[in-house]
Image 1 (cartoon, rainbow, N blue to C red):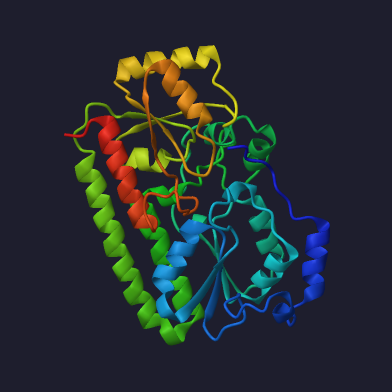
Image 2 (cartoon, rainbow, N blue to C red):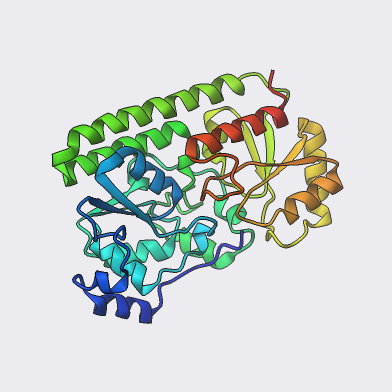
Length: 328
């Protein structure tokens, strides 16, 4: 995934500060920009946060996102305009430790309501996730090792919590409470919308439990170690292509190791995703005699996504897993 440490340049920060709170209209004539509407203006860091804000806020919110569709969220760089818009928002919704540039900008921002999704549920240690996650990017891994969320100093905590519908629902509940507090005039609607979302996520959880209860194998291969929470929730084992850049080819030793595991555990499929290259996954699959398919980590929605929103893509993920694992 080529995850790299990103920082807002000093120029961008200085420019954003110079713009001040009263000059956002000069930044953008778009009436839907954060701070330019009569609605409760929310800036979301990337798609899973954007989806929560829209579902819970309904007609009362104007949501803008820092990560555009198709943009890999870890590589996000913020412009002076984006930083200024954040300062104009009523609230910002983000997931601390996923996007260092966003974390830094929020820390410097005067936004009154800062909602950290990572604080609304319990993050877990799924092993050396960042080593898998950055495909060998030592700089990014070193940075995250310093995060406050890390416990015991062994591994950073896994941020991919939105891929577990149960934990995502916990986050949604916390977001709703924050919205109610920040915009009390519409608190009843936020509660109602949050309850409706909880039912959707509960239905998704039930579908995964039922669909994956009986399978030929419980092991799946991924190009990106994003599915630790999902695997743990439904009794599966995620095996990521460890320490490999998406553009590079697996080493012969790693291919042999995965070939052996595929035979031992009945693995049929190597999953890749929509926002990074599929070259590594397809190389491994060819050499190991396996199939390939998409398992979407839902870091963004594009025209290549197998669904129009979070629920739709998660349903497509379930179907892919059922096929790959031999669901009964």
